[in-house]
Picture 1 (cartoon, one colour):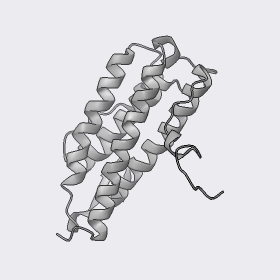
Picture 2: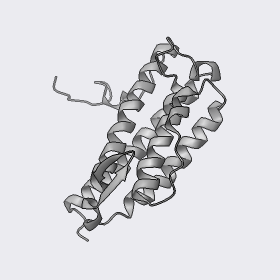
Picture 3: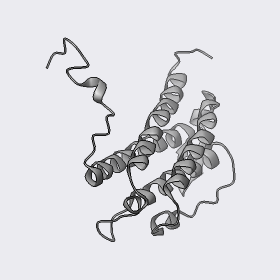
Picture 4: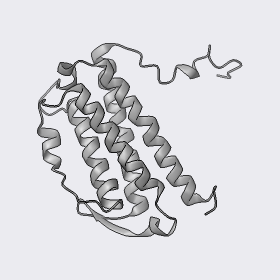
Length: 173
């Protein structure tokens, strides 16, 4: 195994992104009340709680089950149908444990296995495609959760504070 091989770079980047994004969702959950977590502007919108359940379902189905071979028991519709039921603490724990279970599955993928074909959620994908899907999907919904959290709290969550001009001397505009 070459440390800087394209397969290793892809797999390491994928786990790094999930390790970066998961705590951002956790930070958002920490800022919100249980009522805010389950608030919807309209019936057609998803609450933060629904998005967290959806992220857990997606990671479990595509990585833990699809790539990792564990049984798939996902009921996707229930992720969006929920109108409460899981507390902030439960959602935080569920997301953290799901990501923690998925990371070693990704880390153990070999270069040869990246091109293997899988059928996940009715889609014919490669192992590489499944991992890529999960990372981009996680990033998209993390952005939605961050946006909703900022809207509900008015808080600067500080994820990019280190890039402010005060923090980065000699920055060129």
